[in-house]
Length: 235
Ligand SMILES: Nc1nc2c(ncn2[C@@H]2O[C@H](COP(=O)(O)OP(=O)(O)OP(=O)(O)O)[C@@H](O)[C@H]2O)c(=O)[nH]1
Ligand SMILES: [Mg+2]
Image (cartoon, rainbow, N blue to C red; front, side, top):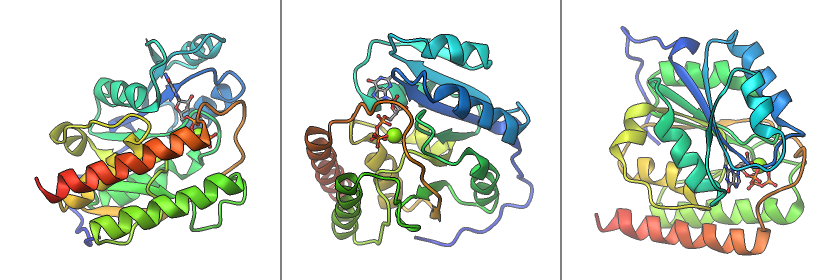
């Protein structure tokens, strides 16, 4: 991963940030996640939720001032891609809405973008991710190893949900994956020589029910990693 150089006349603030997420029956977590974002950004970030819930998630999101786009549930990547599309600011942060990711680290993500990085990716595995179920943890290490071998560059956490992107990166690349979108969102920028920084983050136990089946979801992610690596190799 290349070392970025700071661009002097450009310092983004939270007025330049969109925080986006897919939300699917996250009523147990969304209040905390959106309050945390509000607190740390002083209410200045734009928040976009693409929602497919049958519970109170969208109402809670609106109560917190988020923009809610309703969409039939079609999987993680379909929701997150719609959320990325809807973001209107020059720095876009993705997160899950399950209270696993540390919203209080948003200033650190923004700082790294201001240092010049194009993508800042939260590395959950650095600190051990003890809160992650063992099967998922082993799977995530395996995905990172697979992506590293295929791209020829060491990646520590390919499947993390918390990242910051310069919006040009999102706009310039055509995204194709669904369950594997998170891996794709790291791999294609890396393969195209964008400056990527993996930042160690803490990872907490999930609130509410998971939507990911570890076996079929894991298989989809592995397939996406291979597809994306081959496509980038021959592009
Ligand atoms: N709108 C929408 N959101 C979704 C869909 N599938 C997942 N999500 C959301 O996408 C985010 C990631 O899904 P998770 O269930 O946390 O998947 P995961 O992080 O791989 O699994 P956990 O380790 O259990 O958290 C969460 O905020 C979900 O609510 C969907 O089909 N539609
Ligand atoms: Mg999650």
